Image 1: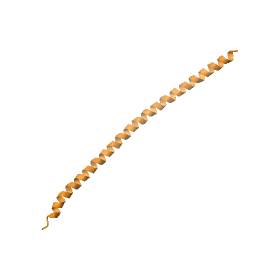
Image 2: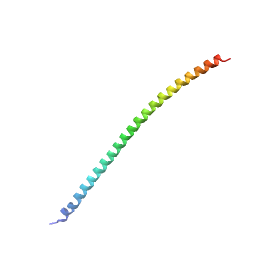
Image 3: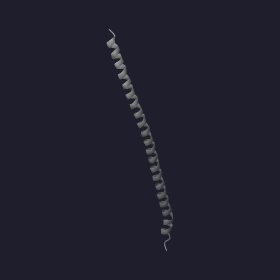
Length: 81
């Protein structure tokens, strides 16, 4: 009777199980890391979108003010001899 094969399986099977479990944990860790990174980038994109909207409204307000000042300057230049 040859007992080498079952003895070899006693070593190989736990090693394969360990490798499989380790790979699954590694894969889950990578997935979690990418998910967290994606969520962080989404939050950053939302903040940047809000900042762009605020800056756009500020630029529009400055353009209106600039137009008013130009009109006032043009009116003053018309009245000045």
